[in-house]
Structures are given as C-alpha cells and as structure tokens.
Amino acid sequence: MAVISKDLGAVTAYAAAVNRGYTGTREEFETLMASYATVAQQAAESAGNASQSATNASQSATDAETAKGTAQQAATDAQTAQASAQSYAQSAQQSAQSASQSATDAESAKNTAINAVNGFAAGAQQALDSVRQEGNNWKSLAQAQALDSEAWAVGQRDGEDVGSSDPSYHNNAKYYAEQTASSGAQITTDATAAKTAAETARAGAEVAQASAETAATQAEDSADRAETAAQTVEGFTVVDGLICCVYEEAL
Image 1: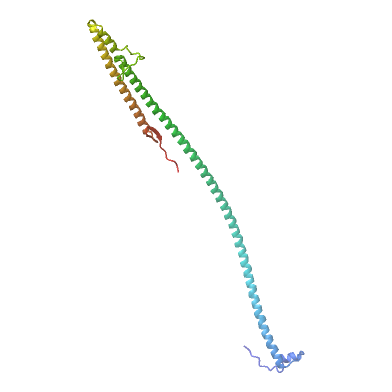
Image 2 (image 1 turned 90 degrees about the horizontal axis):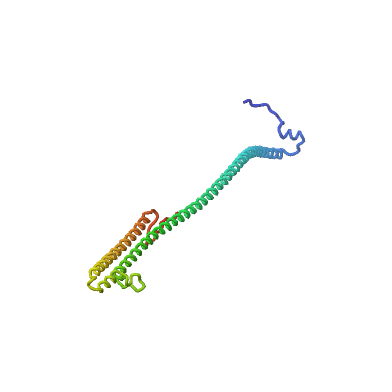
C-alpha cells in the first residue's frame, strides 16, 4: 500500500473548518468531531438495527402468512370434522331407531309365540279333560249296568234291597224263584231253574261289575296315555294333572 509522505501543512480539518467560518477553538473542534464520530457510529448501529428489524419484520410477515394458511387449513379440517361428526350422529340415531324397532318386533314375536303356545296348551288340556271325562262316563255307565244286573238278579243294588219304586222290585229272578218254590214240590224243578237263573243273573252282575272295573281301568289308562303324550310335546309338561307350557322369556 502506498503511503502519502507529502506535507499538507496547515490543511487540516480544523483549518478547513476555520476557513469556512468556524470560530471555535481547536479543543472545541476536536470535541465536536469526537461527538460526530459517536453519532455516526450510533447512526450506523441504528441503521443496522433497522435493517435487522426490517428482516425480522419480513420474517414475521412470512410467518404470519404461514400461520394464516395453517389457520385456514385448520378451519377447513374443523369443518370436515364437523360434517363427519354430524354424519356419525345421524348414523347413530338411525341405528338406535333400528334397534328400538327390532326390540319392538322381538317383543311382538315373543307375545305371539306365547299366545300360540298358551292356545295349544289350552287345546291339549281340553283334549285330556275330554278323554278323562269320557273314561269317567264309561266307568259310570258300566257301574250302573252292573248295579242293574244285580237288581234284576237278586233285588239288591250294591248289597242293599231295592225300594218299591225300583222296576226290579218283586220283579227279579230271586223273587220269582222264591215264589215258585213256595208253590209246592210240584214246581220244585221250576224253582230250581229259577234259582239257577238267579244265580246266572248274579254271575252276570258280577261279570258286569268286572266289565265296569275293566272299563274304568281302561279309561284311567287312556287318561294316563293322554297325559304322557302331552308330556312328550316339546315345551309342555304336566303338573298335578294339568298341562303347563314351559317357555323362557327372551332377554
């Protein structure tokens, strides 16, 4: 680097200032120049700070623009989420309505099934009662016929003499046998025959009684078979002679 060695003489900053009308002393001029240097440095620093502030402001503007875009995207996402939530809510409401309708349909089907089963149980009970009643009727009829046979044979019903209003009173085999025997030895043979007829009639009465008992037993067997048949039907049972429906309530 070249060094200027030429003597400039009195041409100094202070001299130039005095030449241009400065009236202060050299010391005052030097203080003034020193203060100018400080001001210049401060101005330079301020300019640097201003430049940095401008840069920061530009970056802040960029960040703000980015934040604006992010906020707009967030708003769009929020709207999309709201629409999805509304759609899910509608689907849930429809599902709840469908579930409620299904529950109603299930309750109706259960009641229909219960009514049908109860109706079948009532029908089965009526059939069983009819069989029992028919057996009892046959039993009563056989017993009555056995008592009639006994009355016409010996003039008694269940071991008791018949009354005068009974058709077999003084009109039975035993009575006529006794009447015939009392007429004399001449008609002993007829009396014996009548007695034999009376004994035959008594035997017939015993047979009729046995038939009555057999009919009663058959009637009881029929009732038992009907009761057993009712027990084999799925969903039914018999308790104390009555057909009962067994079903489980749906949960």
